[in-house]
Length: 398
Image (tube, rainbow, N blue to C red; front, side):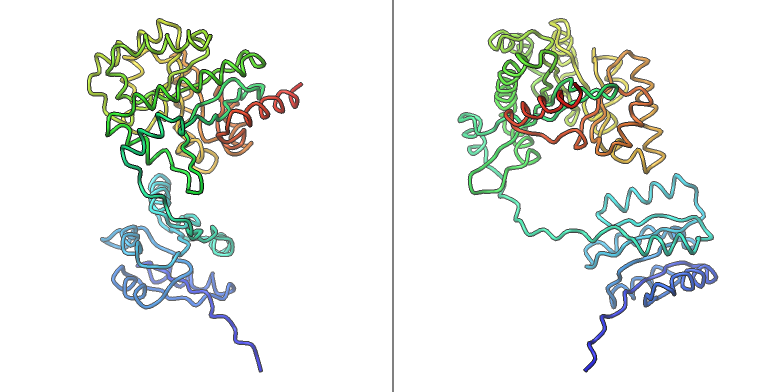
């Protein structure tokens, strides 16, 4: 008895040009796909209701309609097709379409200019991105204000530290403190669940000072062996409304036996600053006291060139959304390169977040980016693990 063969993989081609559809169908014939080729979004929608596709080749411009609008119909419709865009539109439109599809959670195999190269098309279909991993872990229920108050008061929320490394000589120059809320026999509570809650419920100040104190205490311990290592702590824009903040930070530095040079205050403009005048005063006083200021996630949210003009920042951090794509997305690389050039003109130290490969680190170093931060160098880790990492890193460079 012969074993039953698995069904062939299924491909949908959506293109309003009949000749182009024929070229694609003939190009993929050696791969053994069962192919459906249609010329309109309406026909594509009918096929999507009937079949589950492994891959879709989509023309971005279908006469008077935009092929990209098919993505909305695909969302929530089941399946996990690999997407390939083909078009005569310019490279910026192609790149924007790829980013849009990726942000919507689709597996994007690539884009081709018309007439599509048969060999390039076959290569993309033969080696598509892996299917999305199924999530078996259930997200933890969101914490209440009382849960968060208790976690802050009892010290359950602690800082972990991600290394920041010089791209010139690969020596550790500092760390960023990141709040972590581990829970016994329960999933870890992610920061994007409890930090917004703290901002919404008036607990962001106690959370900030809890993390800052613990980070400075840890910094005092490791600076005995690594005197140049500094710690960066995130300050929510909401805490900048307190004119007492500079004196409170200075008091913490005195209590932990550290000078102002040990601390970098990172400001993420994820929230509109309610009183820009008070915030400017607070940040300026911090700089006068010798504490460096870093504008975090530059290029996203509310961060702007106006902030660089008005506020005394000493460091600029390029957001990971640009850095992680800079070796594959020409537009992202242009933005990174222009940002580094602008920052150097302003006399700012430049940190690139999200550095995950040696190739990206090398490119960033070549254009004058000062510091890299990301999984290539190390993930966020507990203090005891950081001490091991620092020691091993120095042994490698010795």
